Length: 258
Image (cartoon, rainbow, N blue to C red; front, side, top):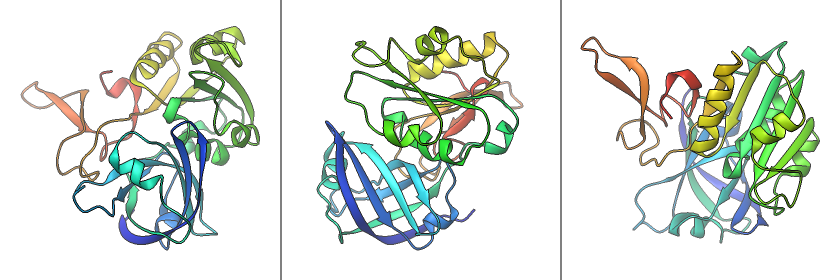
């Protein structure tokens, strides 16, 4: 799948929650090639910010040739993006990375799990995944985003750290509270959550595919800024590292150290 760099156009933008923004972007080629779980690099107009910002794809509209990103304002680059208006241009590189292997979930009971800003990339995954699925979303509090969109795709369970909505606790607390059973996990979120899901899946002999969030620079695997330790070893018995942007961001949980 070829990645392309496009001068795209902002269609609309809205604030979903404190510091969380949603942007629809018109593209010519990226939307036609992208799959759930991939990401794009967005370039700032401020040329003093040389490195692009990697942002996961939230929704993909191939027919309309548009993509949706939902992101958290975390620094100067994303703060700039949050000011964009309809009609503004933006340079994008993508689609990047490897997405979720949806074909492996056919005929299986799936847990689709998102935590925090790892929730957005699970929406397109939920939309394209047919069959039996339970969607479990973890938030800090009742300031939830994308909940309504997820509910259009299947059953949704909510967990909040402060107990202000849904089940008090984390996504695993919600799974246990409802006594859910599954065969395979697709997940994206903070590292502690992914580590806990990895152990949960191992105990129950479930398949588990996780999308890692890492600090990236180039986004195409050239700079080695986003490596993670893998279980693989080379011919000299040295541990091999994986590049989150190039080899991932989706990995089999047993492939990587968390």
